[in-house]
Image (cartoon, rainbow, N blue to C red; front, side, top):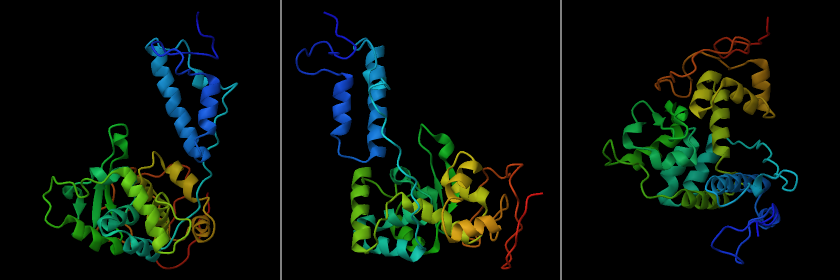
Length: 292
């Protein structure tokens, strides 16, 4: 008897497991995770089912039935960012073996996944920048010469002591262990509602407030385009939004950043979009910019 579209059984395990639309709905509901995480799990399950269909195990993809399976909503955009003294307090509160890791994550634009790929040769302590490799799926995310914020530099100096150029700086740390350790650190530092992902926002906004070029910030974050950077940071409330709207301290497409004058500027995306307003170099005076 051929299984119906709502009752599918992989061969070889009859009576033990049925991969159906109803089973998938129950699995997603029972996860007990946020809607964004449930959405990610559903996408992964859809990929698995596509593979099983290609192998002839399933006749169709039950996870792709949009009429029955409701796709969980995306996470709401985070609006959390902090000053560098708060990031430093979190690093100080972290377990000693993770202080260098968190200084790297909070003091640059790095993601958690960048930690195990960082080699000693990628860290230039003299000129205070790091080169961050992309992974095999996103080679374009390689970010060259990302400035290290001054407060984070001493932690990287300690982490790099005695290492050879090809040595990994943070060898032997799993991504899950990093996440668990970071959940503990803000609590110890008495910083509420601060996620590891928020450190990228904090780094970018602090760079903008110091007068960094939007084109450089976009390259440091590994964004695919300047439009992504604008869409992300123009929606932040308060001081950053006011500065972006007024054009004060923003230097699109120009080199350098006052926070790290010795760090070479990224060579990527040196030109601004033709329709983007170009603001004058920050000189300490407030400027206003209007489109022609």
